[in-house]
Image (cartoon, rainbow, N blue to C red; front, side, top):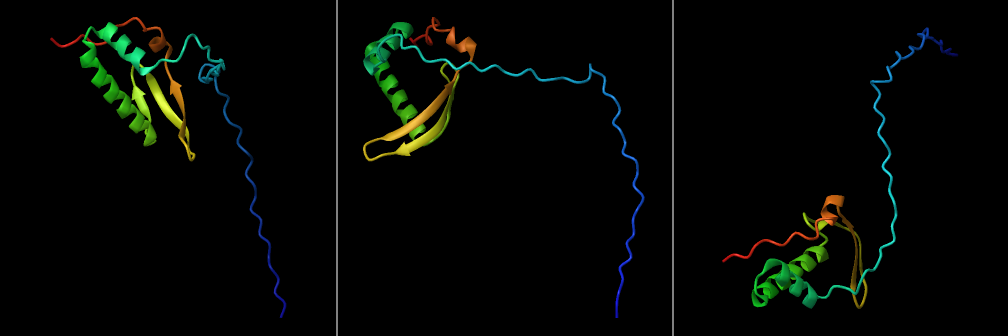
Length: 132
């Protein structure tokens, strides 16, 4: 018993051409230009002692009051980064962890720090005034 399959075709509709869009309605995003800069080392690395002295000079608090605060802040920042959390601290910027690698002698964490232009030019502002 042979069966034959009938082929049915439906008539095609003509393709609709889209209506022309006025040029004022089309908003083209401007490409963002990214410039890769090589960091310029302007001086020796900042050590904890110099950081504490700078905080004391800018804030006006005594060194014995500033030192435990700076050390506690550095410990919290180090623990937060080691946990893999991102930081978003307004004057410093946004720190994003890109890679973490554990070796036998060290825990290597690669980060990216994003700062806006307004934040980089605000270096002369003193820290908060000391409480009396």
